[in-house]
Length: 279
Image 1: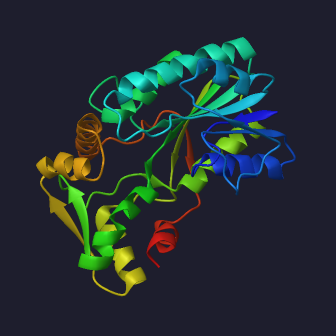
Image 2: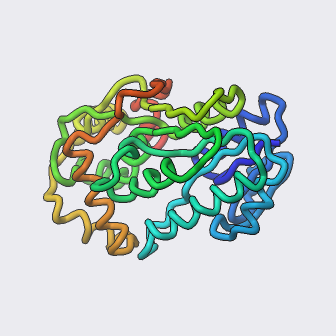
């Protein structure tokens, strides 16, 4: 039995799909039931509930773990540290042979990376045989700007650096890589640095959006000072918005893959992924 947390999300749903296709039994963990969720078992609950997580991991030979987003939290780092501690205790109690944890580029750094500090803590805390999957910037994040691209022809880039290519990856490739690691576990803890087939800049993304929409789209630099008020208007807590500003500034200074671990290139092209959200 494999336990998959976040089973209805962009990455977890792919893990479930791939494991089932390989003939494995899957316990899908989610906060609420989804009509599209197919699995051997479904466990509904919250990862902040230690007893629930322990039961979800009981008798599991492998597990996919992640930190669920909570954009409105005023203590997101504290909350995520508590979730990591719950995972760590439950993995040991259940004696899970191998776990894949969705980490992030920049997780080797102890400060200055905003919400990525939570995955840094996880890499320092989770014990046993773990695959830390350090994913690059999600291609889907660009689609958060679908409205201004469609209505105004603008792809906003807070803090500038719109012409700088950096690693991106599609969430489908994250789920596929996680499933592959679960199906062929390593002999010891490993780190995987995952990015797309090539690096892209926001200028590249704007040019691709122009082709898809049939109208000019320009990557436009905006002052970094505008990021926090913009995000809070969209429902982010002040704390989370400030962490996103710190992360954005870190990416602007060249935050990327560490370059010392196993490297995998995903298959999804940026154009394919933007077409899904813009066409």
